Image 1 (tube, rainbow, N blue to C red):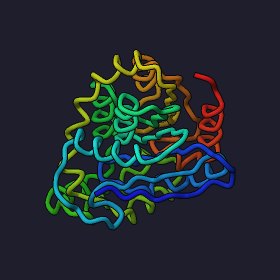
Image 2: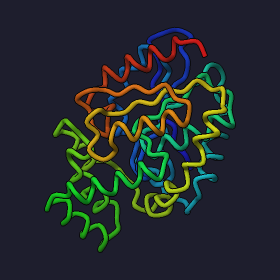
Image 3: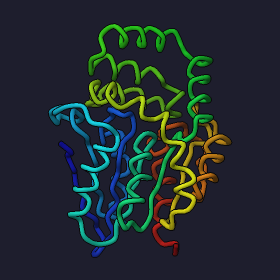
Length: 259
């Protein structure tokens, strides 16, 4: 089951912007700082099975989830853009191969093995005692509450703004979705050459101070995928939370650009 939450635009005949959160297992609440984009788009926030109060109705592969989302988006007429944050960027990229989209936006998405290795190294090198304790609790319990607690302790690995900790601590996450789909991330580097050949307009946004994924490594991924790359100052991994107005402006500029 996929839940779609709509925020209608102030603008007549506005295009649609589909917003896919990361994780996997995070809810669309982690992207709601982008409600400001209703000034330019009709927004549709995506929540997969188990997330944000939706019942978890069984494990699905990345491809199965992508197919379900594709089915839902085919019902929506008019101009469409798709945005994915982190893991959600894989869905945005995959949809560009299946649907006629006016553009895709990937934010802090680690497509390559090099990016994932950098994330692992930074996690180990910067792990606080609180993060280590929360990780142990998660490994023992593997429930929604311990997952939210563990992710909230990433702090500056994820956010420049300290309020980000509360955002994740209170998020309606799904441990089941996380456990069923997290390993899929290691299989996405093969998307990059396909994206390079794909004619869909593409934007990649990174945080200049991303504590997990170095700006330079993400730029390499973006270049390999044929994205226009932009980094945002004073922003970590959750760029949309740290600098919502800057990100919104970049997306609005992207919308107006010709392919």
